[in-house]
Image (cartoon, rainbow, N blue to C red; front, top):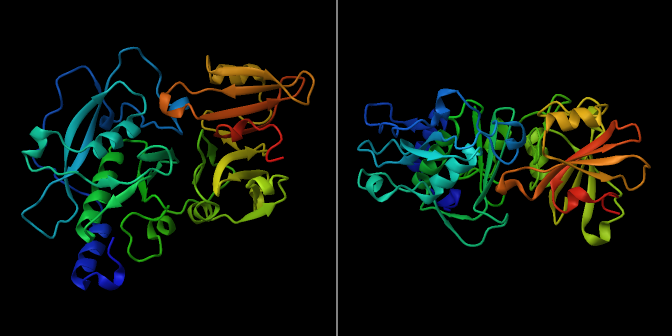
Amino acid sequence: MFSPSRLPLFSLGILLIAMSLGSCVDSSNNEPAPPSSSATDVSSGDTEATDSSQNWTGLEEEAGKKYRIKVFFPKRSQNTARLDYVEPVWRETDSQGVAQYAIAQLLRGPQPDEQKLGLTPALQLTGASNCGSDFKISIADKVARLQICRSVVSAGVGDDARANSAIAATLKQFPTINTAIILDKNGNCLGDLSGENRCLKQLQQPLTTASKLTLTSLGAISVGATIKEASQASGVKFANQPSGGEEYGCAYYQLEGQLKDVSLMVTEGKISRIDIDSKQIKTLSGAGIGDTEAKIKELYSGQIETEPHEYIPGGKYLIFVPKDASEQNYRVIFETNEQGIVTRFRSGKLPEVTYVEGCA
């Protein structure tokens, strides 16, 4: 990436214009026709975008059902001022995680016949991943938070504008996504040369008791983020609490204010688990403290595993196990008392989400 001191003022001005206009998408008749099939067009509003934070409450699984999506790629325009110009192509999948599939296709780049039409890759990645894959994505409250987990090769302002535009257009085709937050591997806004992470400030989502818990997030707080990133995204301050696991690099942070019954486990410097002791906060499916074991099993039919509670005779751990292969490293765990009533619950990644004593 170029530093701000080396960036020409003219180029910086173009970037600011592009960012203010949002994705520049061709709406002419050049858009390719969708493939002839019985697949559901997700951009029509008939379905929801799902990912590692929503598949467990999203689309109903139907054997053989396919979904038709658009993937937007940059195309060199004759109007060189349109740095963020993109055009769509069609892809088809049987995966419920349509948002994740769409971004994976975007990173693969246009096919040879599409390249002949002038479409170019949205971005080029290099180096090792810091999250185990090319990217990670979570969706909550109509905001998609995408983090690229490898280094992005960029020649400057034009590449950054095209990458942001292509990603935003691809994600915002889904009716459950209104806003896309795009981050680099370090958690900074992709292509933001200001050093102020404006995408996080402008799109800050205040965390409230109405925020929903998913496999990987609570509102704008995401598993895999640092405490600083979570505070920037949610507008909430966190207080470090004694964890009993400090010598092993395991820490706990408690949210301040009305959300004091929410705590975050941090391992290796990043959030790995979200613990809920608040009766007001629910999961996306509406599960929460006070619900019965029967209700939990009804909400997540066929996806709950049961284990005896470590300390409460007759109590249980009700463990939600996702079906999608991309989600197998995450769980939601409800704890019940001897009457089968949920007393607390948590979500996060393995193995931390299974620790019965937290960090201790």
